[in-house]
Length: 140
Image 1 (tube, helix red, strand yellow):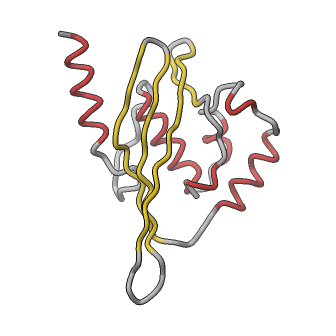
Image 2: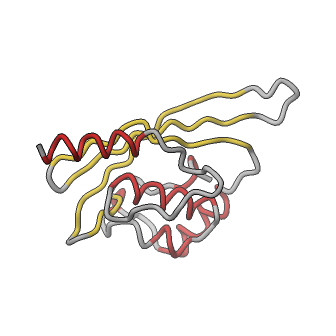
């Protein structure tokens, strides 16, 4: 019964748009909430907030916080787009969040294209932290 309620909650969360104006603070006790907060921090160029959502082993962490800061600044783009959680899968202390990223070009036709991204997380104590490649380019 508890698993069914958790699955329904995760499904409801999956339908939310991450960058919707006026959205409340994400729930950092859930994998989807952590990914939402990470994307919002990247988009707002809030490097410290985004960095704090990463696990020490995230993507092998081949760089330091200053290199991450530079990537976040470089990734910032002026395109119009949306990022939507399409699914959240949680098994014990690990989780996977699937995202759909849609960009709308600035041309007269408003051409758009979509791609998917997967973010992996691990529970560390009472918090969820991102363990997959933290490269911010796809969320900027």
